[in-house]
Length: 130
Image (tube, rainbow, N blue to C red):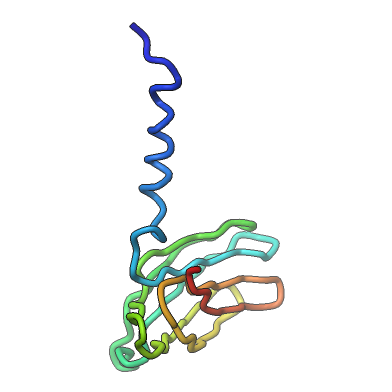
């Protein structure tokens, strides 16, 4: 006896929820969005300022190519402060093509460090989870 489509309906929903880190994740993720006209080779690192050591730099959180018009998600790049705790300053270092930038963003809770590659440079900011 063949199974109906109705019996498989819960499967795509379960698969979609399994890939959604924001439902269960207490750590901060990084999203690299390529808004430029071509593919970009990207190296990105996010490190809490208190843990950063210039003599022993951390391994990159992401090394790879981001196609134009796409968004790459990297989970668990930095800790998030608990309720009522102070923001955690995070050093974000991104190298892509002709652009390289180091910025400090304040992580105020669970959310995403957004990195946008544009035709004119890089934009970085923290977007808290609602």
